[in-house]
Length: 512
Image 1: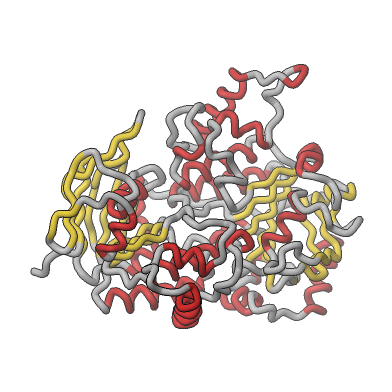
Image 2: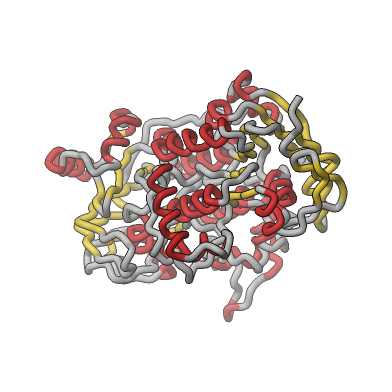
């Protein structure tokens, strides 16, 4: 037998109030694509950070290529041949793409050489990105591409990918899989974390399952079904969604002829965007990241108040120039795609983060009723099964999926008239994803209007009554879910739709 590329023995890591990893052992062979599977908070990301040197274990041993190693920091990991793409990106907003990539590479290379390498690697793997763009102008999907390219440029022997496809389209996922299979064939080992069971079964040839920080099973995922993997991971199969025909009511949100130049030189201009969202229906917007989703969501949330007068109407009122607070007063709530920084303040507790969009714990004179606030947070933690050390836990202490559950729960429990949510189940395990989607449908059935922006086509097909596609700042006509196919939506992502038919279809929906 060949010497293992990576061998972990008895890895344990404790934090106050929680044992993230408890005696974990793991072996990865050269050229193996090895999945690490587990529900949110199972200890997957902590284990990967230990391998990458950004977290130090309390106990246990690490061997790399048959030699014992003590990886003290990511720089030492990269020197050994270990690269990692984090779920939460480690990029400097004020630097360009090329400068960010340059920071992690051999400094004997010039910035110009790195820029050329980025362009070549991006073209080779179909990860389109402009090396000169500042990172703060990128969408989440584009930031993901930067992280993947940066890792590939180090020519790793072991590549760790933490939820690498969470914001990629199906076409981009297929291209990434081609890249990963090629790397594996060349001898690179890959540790792959994903909650998408079909991806694991398609790509990986070995799988280690974690539950509560401990290894509960090792299997060949190609010999398993989604149901059996779910049982290994969470002890049960996720409940099936019951999607009943919608009873759409009055219009809650109307966008009409919204045309707006992006205030970002690298952004996407919105061109004649029109849509309606009625009470009691879920409307979805699909599209490749960076096609105007961010600009549209900033207009709808009130963060960008430059929309032309009359182009955005909320509950019958002109809301084009209203800020987020005024829109919340009209019943609109919003879940952004960026969990830390926009959806939650990292250093504040979960209870304190409720104040970002909830005011029902404020007493007379603006005093905060701390007890009521903590009780509300505790209720959300319990209802949405958030793994956290209580209402006083800092937002940054939660795993990405658990923080997502809390943020979505915070907005749903506010009982909005209109909920706008971007990437609702990004980085969330199958059980939690089913719960969030079920809560969205329950909100719809209670008469709420819901607008979902997602790059997960399966998710949109599962919960939406109608679909749009956004491409190059233009919005397609609406399409009933029954008429939507992956192939058709894929064509529309390139802007290929019939505008005349679309206007007729949208007019029929508005008249209904």
